[in-house]
Length: 372
Image 1 (cartoon, rainbow, N blue to C red):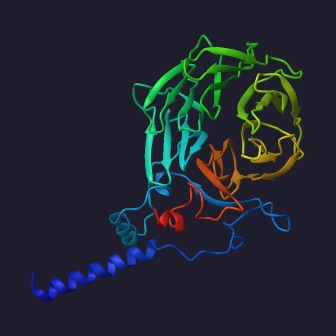
Image 2 (image 1 turned 90 degrees about the vertical axis):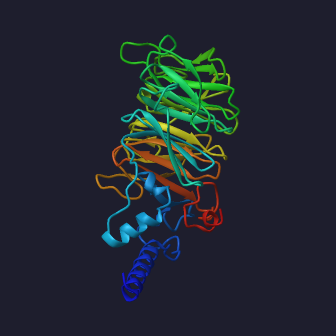
Image 3 (image 1 turned 30 degrees about the horizontal axis):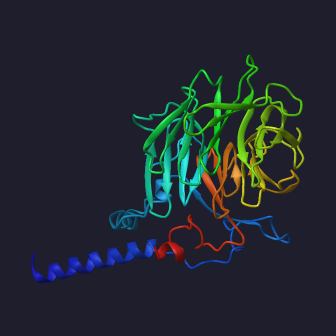
């Protein structure tokens, strides 16, 4: 190759690299209330509580693009691809690491936002999962997964190493969900029962050895009774909140299982429920309840008084639009994560008080992530 041709080739490469970098450069920050993708909840003129921040559909939304893929996108105009969500069900988050159960692919998908890493949990033995549904994580990052396929609760460390297996078919008629307290002492497993079963209950187990400590509830419609319970969350003061799906309410219990109160009823109005599924609590003790039929989550104070709702049922995907929402979680910084099975995504909402660059799950390109 002659000198002139070599110079022309180098110049062409530099131009292509410049185009690729320009295509991937972060756009200037816009005001929080500007544009359709900057949704605020509740809308003005009420005081803002949450801002829609982003949606996660695949590993490409978390992993940084390589220079090679950036160049290819600049040349071809193709979109980035990654490992997608197939049928996400439940979510747990620890220090910016998102754990998502996927009932179709039968393992847990992990999206680590701070490190830009994607990996899986429970895909292989030991600890291979058959049909993961509910998941939760304690303050130390120990992951608990309810395996509907064999009626067990499988426990892993934060990096996916299998630690132990709890429960089994003898303990549950139909294991649906699992919740662990923050210090990792007790596990609250939801036995959803069924038409022919009277065991609609929450079984409380020792988180280390799996011993059954006591049960909460039985089948029925009275105070402290359940019809198709779905999920458990633990409140700021240690109260136990249970989604009582078939009775269209949330019931509240003391830590020892003593009934306290309930809120909600079947209906179409705000504060009612049509198909409640999962719930979560935040550091202030507020309660977030996903309703699949409404396509939203409703936010209640610890006493069960409605504060607001976020989302709407829609056949068209978009921020805060849902067809089949299933899971909800609130992380250490107050970010709210909403799972939709139909659109195969997780929507992330940031507390209005939190700056975009703050917190463990700050998006790539923000000031905090750029400084990592």
